[in-house]
Image (tube, rainbow, N blue to C red; front, side, top):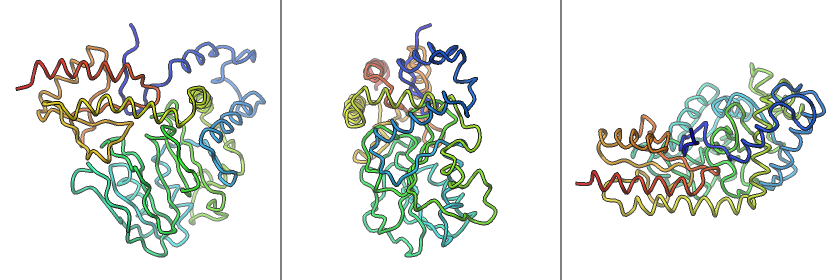
Length: 361
């Protein structure tokens, strides 16, 4: 069976070149006589893998020297607790609620201090990004939290909110490495890699060194302290070794493709193929305000639950897989991450046009 075009939101499509290279090294990594899956994380070979991965990521993102890069476990959801445990010195924080994941982070934050929702787009089922130019952030808030790209709803902050001098914390899981970012604008940015970088099981945290506390909230487990992992260079315990190895290969793939500026241009070109069709379609309707559209996750529907279900079924049979929308949105969602080739988006649009021809009233 040939490979399908996989539009899953995560775990998601990976570059075929990376998968092929990993397959070639599966039984014998560079003459070691073993797979990376079998390799001690304390070995010289693995030390080289993780250090090279970090170095390549630093170059890709131009990460300043006063930021630590941590390869951790627990996924983005564990960061919902780690952030307040490590950063809530005043036991106060501000959150912008633009979807399910920022809402979950907000609810988790309530366990550790006083959290305030300073903006929200819940009134329109998170179909837009609220105005964040003049937020009423408590003066003593320890940080301002956002989910920069909303995987479920298909929205994206095109401009970072004015944090008014507060530390900006961002979950960038579904837009990680899709475009250049100025790391110095963030105190912490983090993301689960399974959407745009690697296999599930790794979360990357990039944190300014002065934010790594000597003492966290009372009762914080050793494994949930950023200091633990920063001091041990992500090797305090056995890391998600194979996942980090794949991430490292993706970093090299991105560099070979021209880096993040080139990737942004490619992603804009891909997204335009789908959005331009949606804008003129008489059957399919995009669910996000145009100025807030994500380049990574495109949400749309026909207006009929039965027709949506038929579309998803027929698309799968045509080799266009994982297009079902999240349950709180319904309809369809096409996740078109870095590794999705433009040919996949073009085939999707071709299928949508044919489907529209058969079912438009």
